[in-house]
Image (cartoon, rainbow, N blue to C red):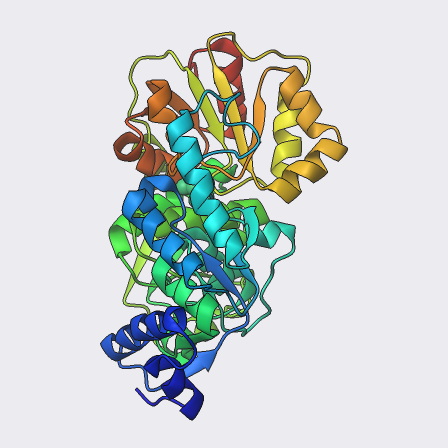
Length: 410
Ligand code: F3S
């Protein structure tokens, strides 16, 4: 890999040990993927902060970086952590776990990261521009930035995103290059998808089929909202390792089918109709007993509009006494929703609007929930293995109904 004079000095340790270690990681990645040089980056988003994934070894490593005075050199946002920093006691999350988690968060804040923890930083104003090269981790945010904005981002991991945050550089390969951004599979959607749960399920269904390839959707323009496109990307990135998709007429690099495929023919065409959608949704339900103790909404983190929808659905109702309803979002979106009265409506009905955290990367299993209802394809895909939860999968409306009745009756 070619290094500029400054990059050579960074690599040699002349700018300190944290930068040297970061360059070592980035050069190794660049060499692995045959990158010829670095590009400069102006935004990073670091994932992998949960104590569940960091563990004690990760916490020790990040503390060492603090001792070495590591500091980020570009605007750097953080992904979710495993607890809500303001409400973990109220939620009943274990103290030792929460304290370790908050130490991890503090260590990243000490390095200059923006301490609002969310997988949807784009909902509160952290938006790259079309064509901008970024280094975001968090697979759902990667798909969002590549597909919906047309920014250029590889599926960064926590260590690589942190290394870019420290150096302002990433190796120039993969989705940073125009030629790697064209579609492979044509997906004809001949069914009106109704809610985020349909889009999330379609994403998980296709991720299982096409691995890391780029799907090009035709037919989504009939029903897609921003939230549903986010859910689609999160689903694709969870069961597959997909980093971007195109939707003809909706996403910026797919003005036409020809543009989305770069003038080439699709490798294969997959038709999605009623039968495929039914299979996709049913495959995400793993529960059989109808009792529901936990309802989780907001994976990826809710937008203001989605919180408003939950508040409206709960209006005049009460969450069942044996059910916990947790809504996940970021600190800024929660603050807006509170000002607008949506948080008050949800909490008056017995739900809780959390910030910072999520189910999959948190520890709801420590609260011994057995059965969860959710509208998120990504959460339904991960929760059985990650959180030992049986899942009922359905629309936001069906999830609220389960929260009120304590049973899944859809
Ligand atoms: Fe976000 Fe956690 Fe879901 S990081 S996308 S809420 S698994």
